[in-house]
Length: 201
Image (cartoon, rainbow, N blue to C red; front, side, top):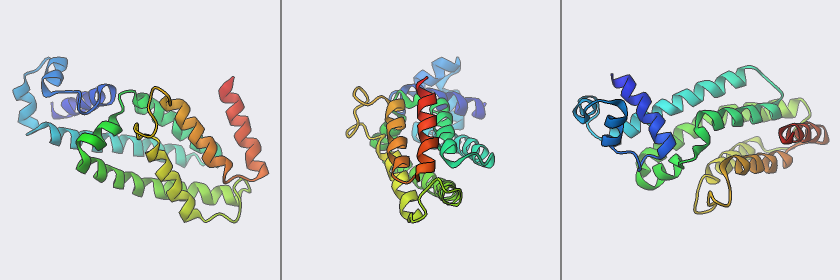
């Protein structure tokens, strides 16, 4: 039952937002009593903490699988983006924004985990791209990896990028193109243009 509560809560938090979903909403959706939920979770904060970690683990496994395929590094970045949009349901309820605003401690903890997880993957992506001649050979890979992570997390700040002006998917596409164009060689630019053109079709 605890696993079922966690799965349903994670799904509802992603669709409706961490602040928006109440324990009553969750109980009603599952057709169980609120008391049953409190048997497994003392409070909503603990449930949110477990949900974010559960989601993080699922996303990490998916990204690891994509990275294990050793695709072209530029294509790999876009495959990860597609996976995230699908897995995080386009983040239409701005869950990360709500998490940051209303549960800052949980947000900071998960952000640190995300950074540690992404660093290895991004560093590997950059190194392979440089070896294949599609990323510039004079890159400071530590800087590029950190600036990439900072950008990916910062574009989710709705004070900077209001969702009505910057829809999530096009914002992510624009950021990826901006980032990749800054590090590619002419050979890499051809691959990037091919991916962008195929996405437009």
